[in-house]
Length: 361
Image (tube, rainbow, N blue to C red; front, side, top):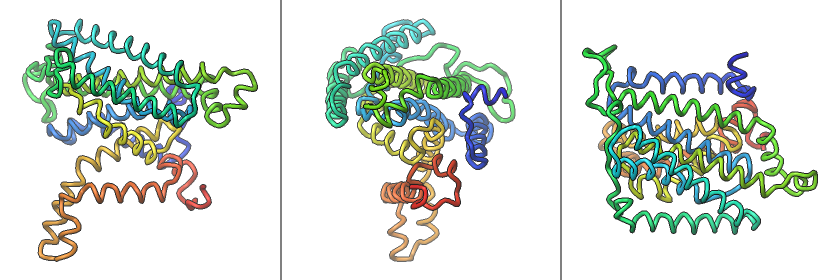
């Protein structure tokens, strides 16, 4: 009963999906102990940040049906809020609080303005407007070097409690040193769990049901008395605020932010890919898709190096799986995933693995 309440009665509805989600949560919780390396910890932290970011975009695209290319702008605002405040103030929790608060206010105002002035136009025109706004913001972030550090970005210090040099135990516990870096990871993990549960609560509330009704048929939703522009604007604001929080988590983990780190178009494309692979309109799809995507992005090249070494001397195969061609194979894996899981991995697992793609569609 407690689990149902925490998940807002939106259960996985599939034993395989439930097992996969449990495995992901346990794996991320125990990563510092199972894989005690800096690289593994960075990969796990990236997964956590992308889970929040993709889930926030799913609220916009999957549940409301709004295609926006400005989502990474709010992600960048959150990261820059922390970075700018921490470089201009004394490093500490006050700087983090001021930066996060200022970023949330800026994101609130910008998302509200974009929503109120642009959501009355047709979907393709709205997408183009958001793309133009995001491009303009990226240009400003690159050129306003006095505030944003320009192309070089900003490096800053964390509060003392989160600094790697801060040690909480004299001796390692289970082979892991309890320091500020480990505390940062578990704060990131706790924040991700709370934000995902909060998003589940939102999409399974009456407000979330109205968003889904607007996605399915906005004319009918308007006809029965719902102001579609108001609900779409609120969805836009909520998605932007969650993306801002994800950007703040990114900055706190990296202790750095720059235009390519949080504002690039590549991140926006990654969001779309993850949503398609995981399954739109399911917060669980953001969790599963983010983990699989970051794993493939981080370790596929290493696997190909091993394969290329094993097949050294075989003319065609050794060239096909050369490590420098990892993006080609990553793209092929995505195409196969979309073909075999047309409604995403979560949608397919919920429908049952025995269902063929044609029947599922």
